[in-house]
Length: 369
Image 1 (cartoon, rainbow, N blue to C red):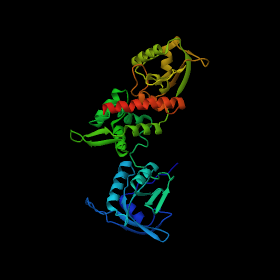
Image 2 (image 1 turned 120 degrees about the horizontal axis):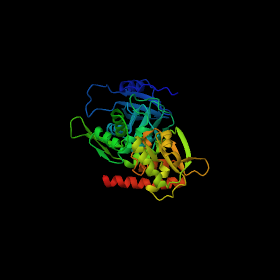
Image 3 (image 1 turned 60 degrees about the vertical axis):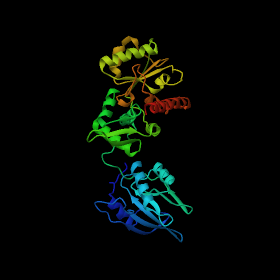
Image 4 (image 1 turned 30 degrees about the horizontal axis):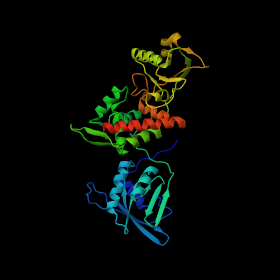
């Protein structure tokens, strides 16, 4: 199992720089000058450090901005500060962070800012002179109290809710919207996830109208959908059953919806079985549904459902993961977002259908925005 180190403070990062323990290869670290860190730093302060790197007989100076947090928001801010403190061709901008993912390395390259991390990755640029790109080293640091992946499993309910309503006046409003859509999540989780979304530049948090409140607004819906798709993981299936019923698909769903409401349990069609509700796609011969308690469902249906492995027309999947039921429609169709994410995991035909949903989701957001 990966052993994560504690994220160093800024003073520790200065010390590692001064001791030459930050990997700048294949360039040679020739000199380091770190600025003293005071309790209050002026807005017009100098760079955190100045380093000089050698390549053959040439030497290049960099104005360095150190940032202990490696989120897109903090890296973007550090890059802007480094650019202000540099003076090409006398000195070039650079950021140093604990971890520099490839996505942020591409961002820095677009900004013409070099970047080095403490995990072994580096991007060192001098226009028309050198370009060094060293990637592939894993993140050796993990922030305490941060959810590992906010775009996966039940944590993903929070980012999904911003595709239903792009703006909220408080965390409480976000929680209320989630509850109205059938989700169950703690305030602490909502707060942590929203903080991560803000750091990823997916939403923007600003001071709200009431004291100690912050308004939250979705600013990159296309990026949010992309992150949800990239990080999607199917639900854990506890039990699976194939069966046959004489009811039509619509009638079967009406009966299940009534049972779920009476029994206070959860039922929803899978994304593949919901696709026809939102896009042009032929209905599958087997109707597939999630349910939170398969045993109780079978007792309720009784003779209306015959378990069989040959020629079934119903598939029941027991799962207690909330995200598959979140924002389920009255006819048991999965939410458009859940449907999109499941179709994106499928074959070429399903992915083409998913593209129809993606366009519809973003167009719906634009109308609300």
